[in-house]
Each structure stands twice: as structure tokens, then as C-alpha cells.
Image (cartoon, one colour):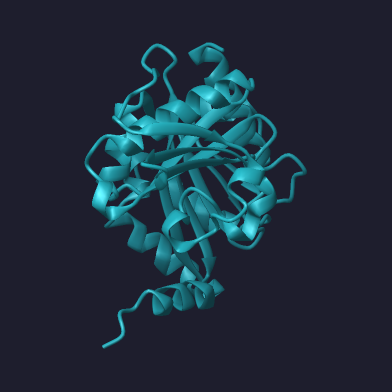
Length: 261
């Protein structure tokens, strides 16, 4: 699989997700669509969405509800592409969404592999390929990035790192869509900063490619450890995305993460 083929597959998948054409992401002008369900969209997307912005760098392709779409169109034509995904301009979008009971919820950067850079990395620990039966008992808090309890049926493959037979790191991938598998990785705190995450991620990415699927990787922009891991493994930034959700849901998520005093 070439980098061009990977790029085209990602564009086609994003087109399913946002109800547009793959070519829309490479247009010089922005595009706004009414958000609708699509059978080939990423399985964890809860379509339709009230407000969702994606950029591969050339423009913004947005999907929104019918009542919010005019506001989204106004917003993305008001500021440069890159500024629409950051403060202070995001505060303007939040104020637009407020009367509709929506808040900005998810902000992430997505990475695709560069096949010219992707290669197996070593860490000095034993690595094992794991299949569903192997990680059935691993849906535990310490592996919550590698495996998702709520979507266990999508987890298809993993790579574990072992120290004297003890699992110390785990990368897993979920079949989030027909041609693309998303990678998540966890390493026990005691074993971090030893190259284990990179060894797991690179090995799993190569295994995914042998299945004729595209590995992809997601990180919050501020999660520099995760971003550095992606870059070390040969992944490169591909697209950015911002999604709004019901304000009550966002408030509950914030409350759940508030430290108890």
C-alpha cells in the first residue's frame, strides 16, 4: 500500500463520515453539509452531529444540523482555516452554539502512517501478537486506551509487551470502519520512557497493513507524549477535527473528571 493509496482511503472514509465527496477536502473553498447517518461511517460516530469540523489542511468541511448549519457556514468563512480550530476564535463558535444547547466537546489530531518511515522498533522486551481470545480478560482500567469495553466487538488485534511473562504494555486496534483500524496504546507507569509504546505501536501498524487495512492514530493536541509516539513510529499528521455535543453531556463529562476534595 502506498502513501497515496492510504491518503485516498482516509479521504473516502472522512467523506462517509461527513456526507460529502472525497474531493471536497482538497477544494480551496469550505464546504458545509447537513449531518446525516451513513452506513459506512466510523462506527463510534453518533450521527447525525450538530456541529463537526474537519480539515486536511486545504479547507474546512463541516457537517451540522439544519438549524445550526447557517451559523457554522458563517463561522468557517469568518476566520482562516487554522484559526477556526483554536482559541480565541473557538469562543465565537461556542457562543453561536450556546442557544442550541451545544458545546465544543472533542478536539483531536489524526495521524496516518508514512510507509517510507514506518518500521519495527525494538524495546528490549518480548512482544506478542494478540487476538480476541488473548485479550478477552484485559478490559481493565490500565488498558483503557488500547481496548474499549463499550465496543469490545470492534477490537480485532493487539500487541503485548512482556517482562518475565508479565504484561507491561499493550497496543490494540479497533475496526472502526471498513478499511481503517484505529490504534490505542497503554504502558504501565513503571515501564514508561523505555520505547515500549513506540515498539508496540509500530509493530501493530505493520500488522494492520499486512491485513490490507490502514492504521490510524488519534491524539489530543496537548498530549505531547502521544504525539511524539506517533511521530517516532512513522506516523504523520493528516487531519484535525472538532465536534460539538449536547451541553449537558459535556457538563457531565467535566463533572466526572473533577478531582474530589
